Amino acid sequence: MHHVSLLVADTGKALEFYSDLLGLQEAERPQLSFPGAWLQLGDQQIHLLELENPDPVDDRPEHGGRDRHLAVTVKDLEAVTAVMEEAGINYTLSRSGRAALFCRDPDGNALEMIEA
Picture (cartoon, rainbow, N blue to C red):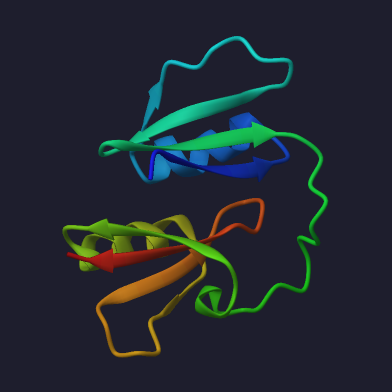
């Protein structure tokens, strides 16, 4: 996999979550006809696309594991949990018993973080 694209309403607000909170670094992005940002995630990328979202943002399942989601590995889930709690980000733990949590970005995109 090379990248995953996520629709966002406000690139700046999304970068506060992905860069400031989660620590992802911006990657070079060509000049496109719409705002956005590319973020490096290991050898892969997350592309934030500031475009109108055709999908409903409200009334998504509370637990992101029951919704489409992006899953990434983390080295220390306890540290991620502390960051989420300090930032007031709601999350749920994996219902499978794995060391993983699910949260949503400011645009309702679900993310799973699995301890490697």
